[in-house]
Amino acid sequence: MPWLIELLKAIGLAVVIFTFLAVVAAMLGVYLERKISGWIQARLGPKHIGPQGLLQTVADTVKLLQKEHITPRHADALIFNVAPVIVAVAALLDWVVIPFGKLGDRVLVVRDINIGVLYFAAMASVTVVGIIAGGWSSNNKYALLGGLRSASQMISYEIPLALGILWAAMVAGTLSTVGIVDAQVRQGSWFMFKLPSPIGWFGLPFGILASLTFLTAATAEVNRVPFDLPEAESELVAGYFAEYTGMRFALFQLGEYGEMFGMAAVATIMFFGGWTEPHLQPYMWLLVTLGCLVVAAVILTTGLRQTLLVRPILMLAGLGLLLSLVMFFGTRAGLSQVLPSLMWFLAKMFALVFFLMWMRWTYPRLRLDQLLTLSWKVLLPLGLLNLLATGFVLTVWGR
Amino acid sequence: MPKVLLDWFYVAVFAVVGTLMAVLPLVVVWLLAPRADLPQKTITYESGVIPFGQAWAQFNVRYYLFALVFVVFDVEVIYLYPWAVVFRQLGTFAFAEMLLFLLVLLVGLAYAWRKGALEWV
Image (cartoon, rainbow over all chains, first blue to last red; front, side):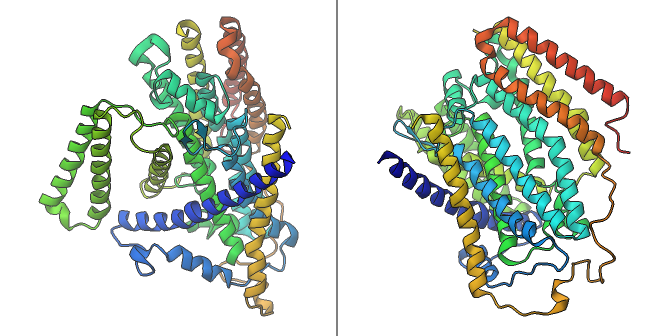
């Protein structure tokens, strides 16, 4: 009975991916968020539970499991209860099309759906339905405003997001996530730096523009600062989930972080080569090593040593040092794949997540009208023109 | 099963299993968490004040003009997807055709902009 085997496989994969989301995206994500926020604000962040506070979010989850669910008296109980589940399930469905790496000839992906990135965009916007449902059904003014703001964000940033996806699909000639990564291998460059065909370095701005459009829209789509108006804590308390308690609140968090990691994963796939290894000359890796050494030396020999921020930067420099040395010797030895592809995918994804968390403490929140202006008067025309220009270049010089 | 059908079969299974796994912690809470009926607890939160009226009142959604423009562009983006996939095989004709389509839309955007639909009212 082949369908029974497929069914069991699907159930197993769903459980694995959900657990991955709960552990890596939600628990590790929240921990990283707090730790990185702490570092940036020159404090330590969680540090008491587990080594370096690593088990803090586990303890928080156990605590949340024992908290009572409160449904406000005036809320629409049915929609109020369903909303967090919608958000969590939408985040899970995103991950069906995301390839994690390659094992021999097998790509580690749940299903390589032929309209992969379109499917992803569709599932990502399902989250907004849950958010609006939660905001409206709470019958709370803060929550309602949060839900409405979320709706405005969705109608504005859906299109720049789609334009970024379209750009990658156009250059790759496919909508499948695996196909897009393969196209980057075939064309010999990540799409971020893609130079459409033989126009050389003049092609550089297209890829950068497209990836910036996508990343900006993705940040807005997952409600991260500077686009966190739906949950602006200084204006709306917690926005659309102000009324949620205990595990239902945790489900919203799971959905949100799952979505954020999902966006980072798709950006990795479309613009940063997915699971593939960057192919640099050995001496380039040595330059990276040198750079890390210089950073570490400057920190250790100057007054910077005394600042709190120094630890994470030193850690990053150490990681870069190790990585570049391994890559240097690996490429020197003529290995075609030095480190496992899964590791590269996760590294790129986490780098993007780190970037998002960094941005949180760098930019102030936009005003609602600024948010709409940025999307409609800047990103949309830019994205369309970029699409047209790339199309022109590909038509004239492509093939 | 053909591959396409199998793909969506997986998506369906993911949706069902995901729902179950999302509901599971809620069931655990139902079993574990204490419950106490206090009337004050279910009052809508409004920064500690007794809430004034309901949130479901008439509300001016000020960005409705954007929402109208959004419908146009969202549909347009859907048209662009198939074009983006095959345009390399179709060559110059497909590009020229899409150029026209996009130019019409850009003119539309410029019109909406000029008319003030993209202004915060």
